[in-house]
Image 1 (tube, rainbow over the protein chains, first blue to last red):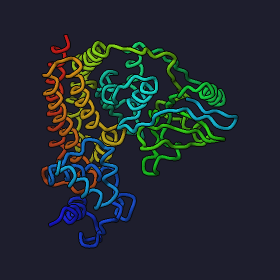
Image 2: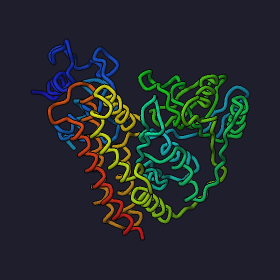
Image 3: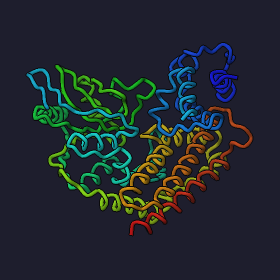
Length: 84
Length: 341
């Protein structure tokens, strides 16, 4: 499973997204401000899940904000951190 | 360098994004006067770390919890410890407050203002709530618009005179009353080590020794006891509102409670080199672990609020995490006191 697929799985399962399956989420779709109606509490869960599932801590909320634009940017952030 | 005409004032001010507004403003203003101090260093030197659960102060009708010191405290202490002279002013008259701002801008002086967040138009709608402890720096003016270096945003922003006026005179708890402050004199050479020691010792004393049950380590433990009781005492619905308020105050204001712990950890790392005390590096790691627990606590609370809690995500589990945070922080502060004697 790719990082993008895992992230979509996390969004749907851990955030209890309704009426959407992981396959229906586009890589470029905005995570926040789009159809998912997520807020800062959900952002916190994503930060936590990223650390738990990929071993990538997100201590700086500035970098988290930039990474949270889409599945694609978040996956790129994770890959970048894993390679360091 | 200052570019000024009748309609336009642009101060050559380096905008740097930060995690927390007041320590960011502090770091950026000092940088403008050639003192390069990181945001984390400003936070630590200014004794920004704090905890207080203040049920008698209500924000949105729910108890106030604060994870950092009083607003303005970081800047005041950093300025004092570095020997800077600062002009502080509050106003009754909005007109006079805006005129005073314009006068300083015309002199090429960047002016920090305390504002409410709700009236700042560049805040995304989701973040525009009534919170009167925001700090920013006004660095210019173009016609009716002010140019704002708001440290929590990636780039300088613009704000109309009427919006800035409303933000400076936002009503409600801790109203800013037009507060503005700017540097009058900044020393060219400073010895950071004594300021860092003072900053550390003040936090340790405050967190370990403040009398009363609601402040510092005792406050964290008291909150743990309260959280445990909330479902029975308040009923499920109200308890969830309390948890929601608690974690929103933890994670949305400033850098959030966990974020402040991470920032303090970064400060301790810098302080280790400055004070030539390697032991501070391992205390920095411990503080990062404490920050992780604070974040776990907020995640758990978030799950309760969002109705996705598992059997393990309970009020008792939240309280247990708080007690771990209290123990972890207390151990760090006790050792810091020893190391900075």
